[in-house]
Image 1 (cartoon, helix red, strand yellow):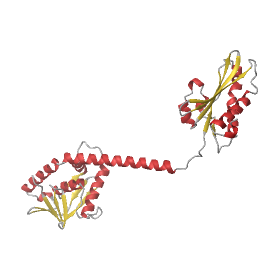
Image 2 (image 1 turned 90 degrees about the vertical axis):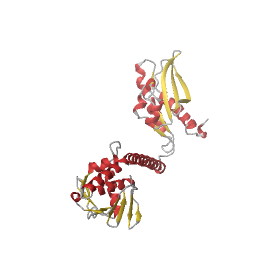
Image 3 (image 1 turned 135 degrees about the vertical axis):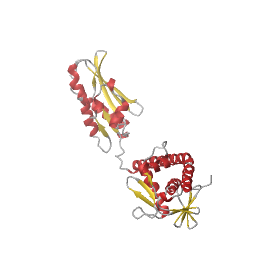
Image 4 (image 1 turned 120 degrees about the vertical axis):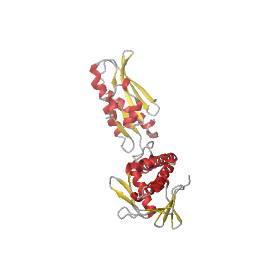
Length: 314
């Protein structure tokens, strides 16, 4: 069925083609504001409730921010008509209720007054036909609105991702230095009297490595994950919580009737051992100097492997 043409002031609107002209010149109008105008014109002089307009524009299958979408739609319509919400000539807002087209409207040879009650029976019947035509276009327009919303959402996500990437590139960076985590050493001898001596080794190692200089190396010996026993220590968790590249760990064991401390340096990105040293002690050793001996060997290995300090390689 061909569309109907409405004339009001210097404007003419064809609801079949959804085109608006001003003094016979086309006026740009997006599809949703055009559909809103068609409904308002078909009920010129009457209140069109907000929920009616929302249902007409989006139907029940589309989920958007209707208040924001409706405000945008009416704003675009007013911009096309050169209208104002504060001093309207065409579209009047009735707060919390809806909208009303208040200008005289002509259709064909008949003049539509501002009041709907002045319509003849034939005109009212024609208005119902126009509403039917508008509803037939609803499904396609709803799909177009949903597609537009999806594209807008993707654009926002990409914009946020780009902003995050820019922040990552431009944010102040920490000094480019390796970080070494030092775990509390484990007493696996079963002799509780050795707990204190073994637990103190890590503190001496931290002190020794920190003395190499904070600009050269970062040392982390305080994270809770470093206090877990060896069986419960996950290298990935250590890397995540300490931001370290290497882990220093050690275990006091009894082997062949002798005490020995097995010390490791582990690269955390792949879990591989890059340095292992076994330090043996007599069975009755009080371990009084073990911490200093271990710390010295670990410092030498860290200089060579982590800091690539050729001067200390020998």
